Image 1 (cartoon, rainbow, N blue to C red):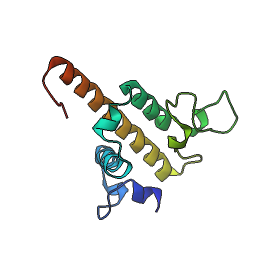
Image 2 (tube, one colour):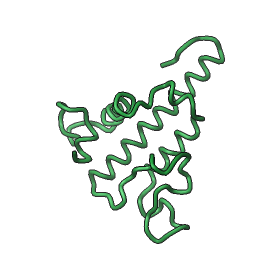
Image 3 (cartoon, rainbow, N blue to C red):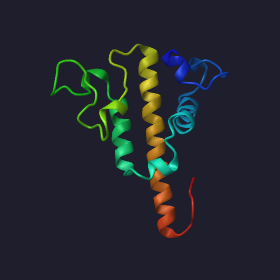
Image 4 (cartoon, rainbow, N blue to C red):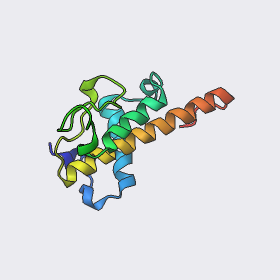
Length: 129
């Protein structure tokens, strides 16, 4: 499966025909349905960890870890979890770069949702999803 195929649900239009927001929403759905990164799973992590993971995907490859090596490394120093979950493109094509940014956006959405659920639970208003 190509990176472009991973960036969209099966049966949908090619990535180039979708806006960034639609690609991010589709990726977040994929993360939940395929990877199992549900709200319950996200609750096991500080929202800042999700934001740090997003930052790692958003960084250009040449800046992911310039202190450690002359070539990009995974995980970057910012990566909050196990290295096996860090999967940015090493030498991205345009589609790989879009894919990394889509992953970053989906992780940011997950962090926002986690913060809102936490605030909602703290105020006794139930689920903010």
